[in-house]
Image 1 (tube, rainbow, N blue to C red):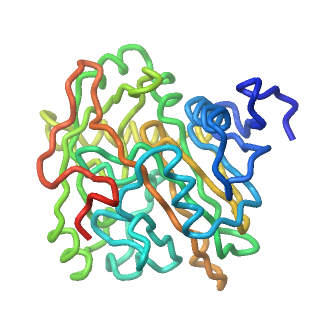
Image 2: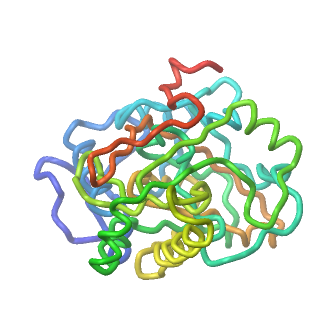
Amino acid sequence: MSDRPPLHPDSAVRVQPLSAHTGAQIHGVDLRAPLPPQDVAAIRAALHQWKVVFFRDQPLSHEQHIALARQFGDPTVGHPVFGHVDGYPELYSIAKYRRANSHEGQPELRPWTGWHTDVTAAHNPPAASILRGVTIPPYGGDTQWTNLVAAYRALSAPMQRFVDGLRGLHRFSPPAGANASPEYLALVQSKTLVSEHPLVRVHPETGERALFVSPGFLKSVVGLTPRESRQLLELLWEHIVRPEFTVRFKWEPGSIAFWDNRATAHVAPFDIFDLDFDRQLYRITLVGEVPVGVDGQPSTAVSGDPLLAAHGAAY
């Protein structure tokens, strides 16, 4: 355990950083019960600093998971396109084979394949996500996150100035090289979400600039030719997944990952499909703000409605 002092003198929270830029483990709290305000503040401060925070040995029920999330914001409906857990509209099931019917054929595997920021096709993507491990394999199945603020800061000054003024189109589509299944197409077309976001987003709470370039959703850069757009995006996607910006998390039953969706991208494991073990997690996302670029201009909704709190959504 870290010897670092609490972020707030009257808080029990202890923070153990896991890499130079990204990820910290939180000690000293029991997430099954309501947190005192000073612990909520300390966890939020750690989240802003490390972008993703982790908790061990927190065997939460669905109800406790939802109660935890409500201390940090308003939960959205589980997923705006792919639904929610029966009886729990705030929860989305992350099951091993949930994508089995989404596409056909072998995707083109590149260093950034699978990396994404949650639901950036929406006009107001989630502010944060809270993922809970329930059924965890004895090995394999790790998740990785990258720090998009650190990635922006590592760009050269001329490149920062260039991307500061650009915007991109985000939408749902199958992985590059694969074909969408009829089931996937029917769901995506029934609830079409397309948005234009700045490539560099100003964080609404910290003021930091982050590369808002979700590989899984960002399809093109507005105003560039197709080749210019593809070359630039591949350069940025390769850049954001550099190992020094990332952290890799080994799940255990009762583990919790809580990440700032405005400043990170993450990737689900592919190795789990090479193993016979099951894997089941549950995710809650929190209602987010409309992104704002360096120029002060907000994102534009091309198609679809904003993500609402679960109690106000149609489901």
